[in-house]
Length: 171
Length: 264
Image 1 (cartoon, chains in turn brown, orange):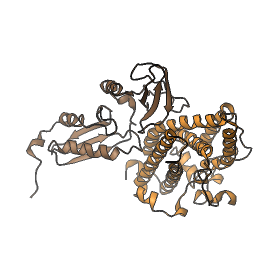
Image 2 (image 1 turned 60 degrees about the vertical axis):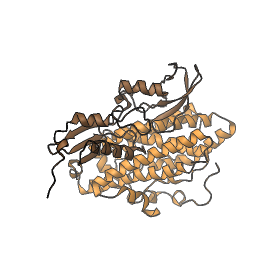
Image 3 (image 1 turned 30 degrees about the vertical axis):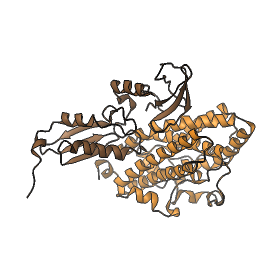
Image 4 (image 1 turned 90 degrees about the horizontal axis):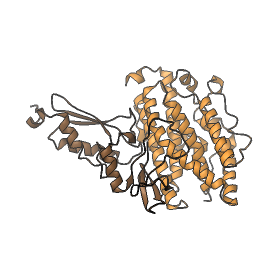
């Protein structure tokens, strides 16, 4: 005998799914969630209570992609949903411009310089964009390593307050 | 099958598979060469940087082989890990042993500039899945270019020894770099159809960019032959008649080198 959807999910609204996803942390930067990062692009709920979540990967070689995919699935299942499909899309490509204002502030308090606007200017340039110290806001900073502990960050030292810090790449 | 893959002729599909595999194979081999430095790079930051770059290159290989999956249903993991050495279609350029740090950084610079410019052109591909992949990957590639451009400069303008090693690396790499601009069989038709970037145009931009950096900023001297003399793409006579790509190269550039890798 075929089972219908759980009674509790028949009236499930996409907003409830969004809310659940807003609690899924970025596995590499736990102070922000995957919705803060702008990674979740679309949520649909059909008449049978089936949920489809579309997300955009940040970096193509990011080792956390599988974790994120599983976390999304778990968060939706926790709402009582049986049938979840997690899809990824490359179009439009993820950009750090999608990180929301509130999350930028949290990144800064966490000690990570938020990304400068990526904009749509020339993508192939040999020099790096300017970065501000997350502690003292000085622009008098030096990049000490253009790659950091994760694909999305690079390492800096502030010459004003002398503190080392991580900066989010603008992509 | 998607609308995009159905619009291709059989010949176009086969040529596209060749190009995508060639791109992925270059990425996989170069990533492994980069990975050989893990735990051995001159300083910790560079160990991490090179591992990051290699990780990105493997990510791009995954994207290219994912596009191939759409065309022939092949499994990217099987292609990456279960083919014989002779079935790889990478350039000899990426396969050369990692050499010393100057060799590694200079090869990465020549490769990253090529890849960034190819991807930038590929964002305008009329094959939508490729344009999407290119738009994604080009954003990552700019970090590689910035990093390796700086290393080329640092080494070329550093000590007498670092300068000598960098010039030696350039002398050895330059002739091989031309392989990156060789067409695969059937590629000219794809270029004409707007599906793939014109390698000749990419080569011209690449040559201009690396010349300005290596001779202008770094004060190095380009060897006379090699990547100077690119084939004129889009003409069928220059397309590669056979597979794998390296087979048309002079014997001395295609025999596999053996022995100890590098002196770095």
